[in-house]
Length: 58
Image 1 (cartoon, rainbow, N blue to C red):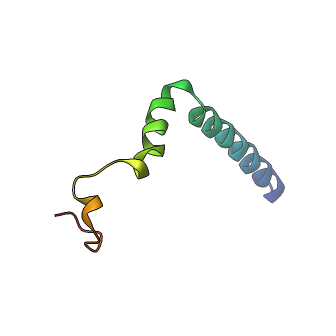
Image 2 (cartoon, rainbow, N blue to C red):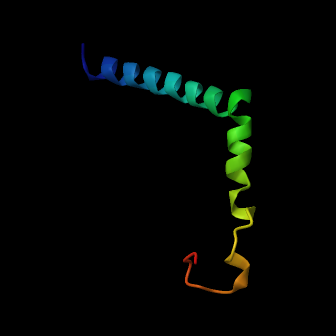
């Protein structure tokens, strides 16, 4: 086994890992969790609209 075999195996492994990541990210089981995370910046927090408090909650 030389370096080229190792490069080929690592490329194949990374391709499989990438495809698995894509399937995980676009699976319907994750949609609710990702939708909730996408709406976090718009969440209304108590005391956040009152003024600038240096990013700290009171």
